[in-house]
Length: 136
Length: 363
Image (tube, rainbow over all chains, first blue to last red; front, side, top):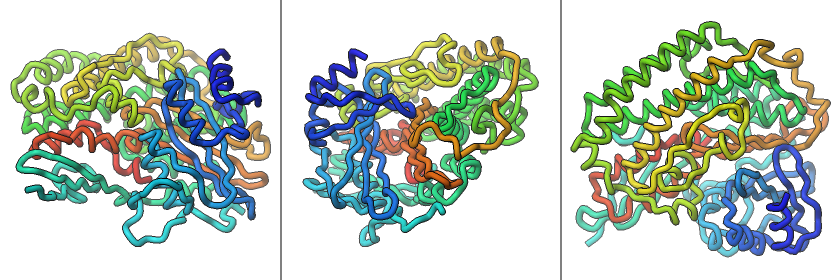
């Protein structure tokens, strides 16, 4: 619990950690993604992945950022206002491929970086995983 | 003058298609670009169109080497959705299957590495050893690639003859100690092809977020089996081999030592195999009684940490989302740093030294 408390204090977040589905979740509130990435670097947390979600109907898109700290899986959800969010590639080299993959699968634009095709080929249309309603 | 040499997507050094564009000055690699996606099957998207039971069979096909690990991680995530805890015997059988899979994967890789070193005799020795593990996997599950062992709440099949597994472990361990490890560590062929080649520094390993044996060969001692134990790993005693050099030799050594640790784990798991049921529940997945909306599970695959996130959709038989983060996806970008300054002739072995799985990466 001390470790989680240290992260909250570092980020200046008063929201409680929620232990759910194998992850310790923290709502970042007003903390920006880049502030979070900087704090994770300082705390020597290991970046794992970003999970992208297309929310039902017209609710938009959500990204969940995951880091590991001493075997504890941390999760930070970010709901996107449109289809764009700041890239943290310059702060965290390990996000390179997953940002590129999410761009191709969900047409999310990670601003502040350039990217080449990853899973798709040059000229292919991005957003291959976007759907209307698949699971009926 | 620099020039570009494409390696792949189809090349004798590659087990599966991907492409490495090598920028060279003379014989020295000065930069490299990786191109993946040749095996992109859209499996995560496809998972949203299958029900919870069908998804298990689908995800088993993400990888042809560590198929069991994918169903194990997925089933653990789905058990998290419904708060199911598999019975102790199932947890032990999961450990046995995971370690047998690690054995055959590591021995397979040792064989491929030997072939790329120009060491064909060792290639044949390793594949003969691997065959013994495959025979045991077939005897347990009836299958050699997709074992269909995991289900939500436990496992599908029992281990009827633990003695046969123990006998195989004895034979494999003896051969590893008698030939494979001594030859890989002392022969001049292996030394000249591996020592000081394809170095990934400790700092770069951390900044790239690499996992598994590649991380451990660069001095990063992370292993999910120890850091966040799952199945029955919390009850097993084993060491996590770590090497500081970050070169191909260190990766070779880490995997060789991991084979010995796997043998140790297998002996413990088989000798302590508790009696009881193989699974809980009636074999049906009750998608109306979820305790959380998203569940995540992590497992230490032969190539490193695998992570699955599974989300449910109210009233639907299908998951809303299945996200897979495979180990090679985390490790492959580091190839670029490993080949910098290397001789062109060493690049096939360097890229192979991460034990890449392109099908996993592309999904």
